Amino acid sequence: MTETTIEKNLFSRIFTTLKQAIKGDESFDYTSGSIKKGVILLAIPMVLEMLMESVFALVDLYFVGHLEQSSYAIQAVGLTESVITIVYSIAIGISMAATAVVARRIGEKDPVAAAKAGMQAIIIAFVINTIISIFGFIYAKDILLFMGASIEAAEYGLNFTRIMIGGSLCIMLLFLINGIFRGAGNAAIAMKSLWLANICNIILCPILINGFGPIPAFGLMGAAMATTIGRSIGVLYQLYHLFNGRGILKIIPSYFIPDLEQIKALVKIAAPGVLQFVIASCSWIFLAQLVATTGGDHGSAGYQTALRIMMFFILPAWGLSNAAATLVGQNLGAKKIERAEKSVFTTAKYNVIFMAIITVITLIFSRSLISFFTNDLIIQKIAVEALQTMCLGYVFYGIGMVLINTFNGAGDTWTPTMINFFGFWLFQIPLAYLLSKYYKMGPTGVFIAIPIAETAITLASIVLYKRGKWKRIKV
Image 1 (cartoon, rainbow, N blue to C red):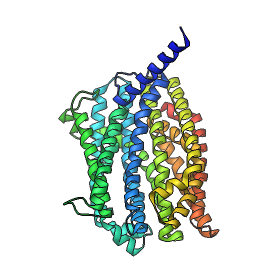
Image 2 (image 1 turned 180 degrees about the vertical axis):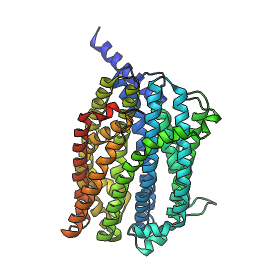
Image 3 (image 1 turned 120 degrees about the horizontal axis):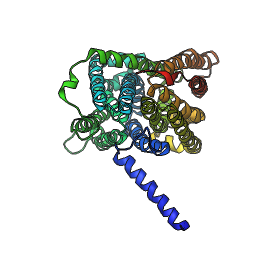
Image 4 (image 1 turned 90 degrees about the vertical axis):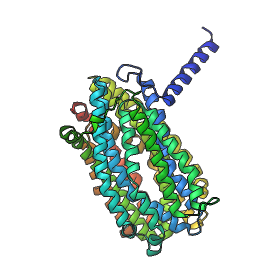
C-alpha cells in the first residue's frame, strides 16, 4: 500500500468519524468499540454544545457592552449570571443524575428503564424551578443589591434580572434534557439544540436591544428577552426529538406518572450533585460580591467581562470532559472497569492539550479579546489583569473537570461535593478575602485566589480518583 493511499484512508476515517459525531450515531457501542473513537464521538458535539452555551453570555456582553451606560449594563448581566449559576448548579446536578442513571441502564441494555428515569428527572426539575422563578422575579432588585450593585445599577438591571431568573425553566430543561441524551450516547442532539438556541439569540439580540422597524428598542431588557426566547426554542427542539420515537429512548405518557421510588433514587444521586455545584456557584457569587465591594462598578464590570471570556474557553473543556461521564457510566454498567479507567485517561489527555493551547492564546491575545467587548479603558485594564491571572490554572482546570465528571458519571456524587466544599468554601473564599481585604490587594487578590484554589482542588481529585471508590458505586 502506497503512502498516498494510507493518507487517503486515514483522512477518510477521520472525516467519517467527524461526520458521525456531528450527525449523531446511537449505533456505536461505547462498551466495546474503540475508546479513542468513543471519546471523539461524544466530545466533538459536547464541546460544540458547551461552546454554544458560552456564546449566550458573550453575545449579550457584546451588545450590552456598547450601550450608553455600559458599566451598569455589564455589571447587571454579570451579577445576574452569577446568581443564575445557582440555577445552572441545580440543572447540572439533576442532569448528572439523569446522565449517570440513563448511561448505566443503557450499558445494561435496558432502554425502557433509561427512558423512565429521564422522564422522572424532568418532573423533579419542573417542581424545583417553579419555586426559583417566582422568588427570582419578586426579589430581583434585592438580589442585585445583595450582590454589591449600586442602587443605580440595580434599578437599571431590574427588568433584565426579572426576565432571566423568571424564565430560568428553559435553562434547567436545556441542561437536563441534554444530560438525558448524553447518557443515551447521543450528544449530537444536545449540540444541535444549543446551536439552534444561539442562532435565535444572535438574531434577536440586536433587534430587541437596539430596535428594528416597528420593534422598539428594549435596551438591556431586550438581551434577556432574546436569550430566554432562544433557549425556549432550543428546548422545543429537544422535546421534538425526545418524543418522536426514533431514538434509543422511546417515551410514552405513562413515564410522566410520578414514581416515588425512581424519584427517590434520582434525588439520592442528584442531591450531592446539586450541592457540589451550588457550593461552587456560591463561591463565585461571593467572589463577585468581593470584587464589586472592593473595585466598584468598573472593577465589577472588568471582572465580569473577564469571567465571561474565561467561561467561553472553560465550557468547551467541560464539554470534552463530559465524555468521561458517559463512557464511565456505560462501561461500569457493562462491568468493564478497565475500559472505564482507560476512557478517563484518554479524555484527560485531550483536555490537557486543549487547555494548554487556550492558555497560550489567552496570554497573548487577552487585550484584543477584552477590547472587542468594551470600549471603556478602565474596564479593559481590570479585565486584562483578571483574565491573564485566571488563565494560569487552565491546565489544572482541564484535569479537574475530567475527574469530577468521572465521579459523577459513576454516580459517586458525594466525592466531588466534599472536594468542592473544602476547596471553595474552606480555601478559595478565605484566601480571596485575606488577599483582597487584609492585604489590601482589592480585586487582584480575588484574581490570584482563583487559579490557586482550582489547582488545589485538582490535586485533591487526583488523590481520591486513585483510591478507586468511584468504581464500586451502585446506581
